[in-house]
Image (cartoon, rainbow, N blue to C red; front, side, top):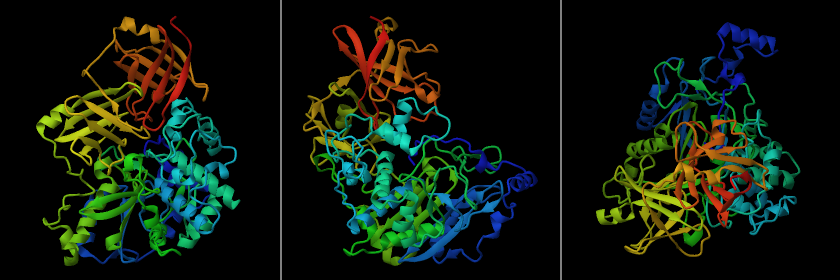
Length: 620
């Protein structure tokens, strides 16, 4: 699942009962008593063959070994053999079930590579081609202005809206119970134009993997759950892996997830909140579930060489070239990074899952973690520390840590150090800009000696491109893929997605504003003919004079309400009215006119572009 997925407490998985009370409830439900949760625990399963590495992993996870503390399980493989396997803390702290490699946990977005692997197997069998138009298999999906292929779905380059953001922007996020796959599919079919030409840009999207799962069902004539058993899980030897029909479904010996609020607290009793619930049904994007034993088998499955002599993981990591020949970090449902000059292939999953492969070392790090902290303590960050410990443990790998290695400071747990801008250059670039035709508003700023690019609430490092006067977002980050072309002191031009040439940017003052009296012309109701949703625009409340309020539908949830700040002309930037909302991106709103009258609006975020609404009523 996308990390932006809304989480809610799920009663069946909190188990916030006393031990005796829980036993009584389970018996009343006709279920086995609590002892069944530990009876299947294996013995003698821990592995620690590399002392330096195991000590480092133990040190990382020591804060998660206190009383009642959730934690995780870590496996490290080298040359096909497990050299570290150890659990830390509880998989379920209410029942005090410790982590072990048979505990099941939802893979979430790690499922994406499994879906891509299943599609590759179908291609090997001659049943699909990755270059098939999606309408060949989804005959009821509308044909848009450009062809979308299966490859575009798997590489997040389709130009389709991200459905998990779309459901909130069309007011359906307030529904009780999960939004079904069929409802998501019908919603997606209403998109009348693409955000960009397929293949020209990458925007992380659950939509593409959900559609891929539907194609797998059509091609195999079986449910996605059954097809994945045949194509991936059974061939890989993943004996307890499966696809959950509904994400909050509970399985015996299943880990629960706990939000620690950003810190590993010594007593989580008051602070560790169990969170397990998704408002949309998942499938090819995040419905996989299984144990660490299953994940180890999946790593071996990916590393196995196929009929063409290439491993599956290498095929997944084949370069993907976007607009202007830019090779992005995200490939076929895996990401490619650099650690001290080593090529690293990896993918994560919501709530703390991550697999990482270093081909040059034949080295895997597999993490299943249920103690949720902020990004500084995420499994993807820890992987770099574990990899360094492995490099330190063997003199054969000392060259990667040596100061003589020109890429020795390129680490997974640090931002890349490739900025060499002069003060004059930095001063010239820093500012706020508008691309008038699209309404894009971008900022270039300095923070902790980093030059940052920000758009739609997403940010990334700005790095020098192929020539002295061109820049782009760092290709190793999941930031909006842009290119800036400097024209000396004359200004900047912006290239995005399938734009054929740079468009001149207008530098904006740091703050602009409209008088409250001038905002009345925007007030009224606006309707999207594609999705039927009605937006209400009016004056912002709570003393926010000079701002507008945007309400999606009735604005029943905090995530359906935004405050709009004037940027330039009829363009406004939005931000959530209150913190903690589902939609973390900041929408841009551009109102349209006929003469002196506002007749409509167009809304855009990083993953839902060109949502057009026409005015129903309002000021004349």
